[in-house]
Image (tube, rainbow, N blue to C red):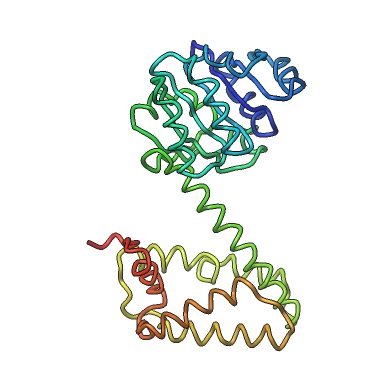
Length: 296
């Protein structure tokens, strides 16, 4: 990359991004904290700038900022000075609506917007092993490719603008919810004499309860819309009832598992008792009016 790349935000992740970019191009860097800007400017290939608007001289500007509001403020300051056809790449974690707002701010100036959510931590970015979740027009993705390649070797293009951010937010929501379930499972194991480490080994098995709902029930049943045979929803409800009773007997407070049980009650009451319990996905199809399965 011959032209400089702008970088707004030099926190922990932003600093790692600066190091990755500086290996392939000249970087113009800015942070609201002058000390951070100064520290980044000491890196080979990185030049600190005094004002956020100074980043407008770059054809591509990367945002690595703490909140959607700060990203919007930065884009509003940078975009007016950028040349038409320039590109702002949002790597901060925001929602699709925030990406659409960025597009609205930048479009009057002819500036394009792309989301490239970082699906990893600072250590992975520093090591060059990150994954980017990308949303935007194909032409914009192609134009940003040198910057994207400098940041991460693995890139998943999810769809239109905002799709990358949606995928990251959904992924994080799953991870955080699963962490609550695992904490509840660990508490039940401790109360019933099950080795927590042995429980972890069990759950890590591809045929056990942690990954099989994804690899079998979601991929092989929900997506094709095939709910015949398999473990009936009524049986899943029975097992869920047993788990609630076990926790009650052991004095273990449940939150996620308790809430999930309600879905099986609704599913059985709604006539799904004899179908595979992956059929609970059809409840969301009914509630939202949108298909989850790929079945036409």
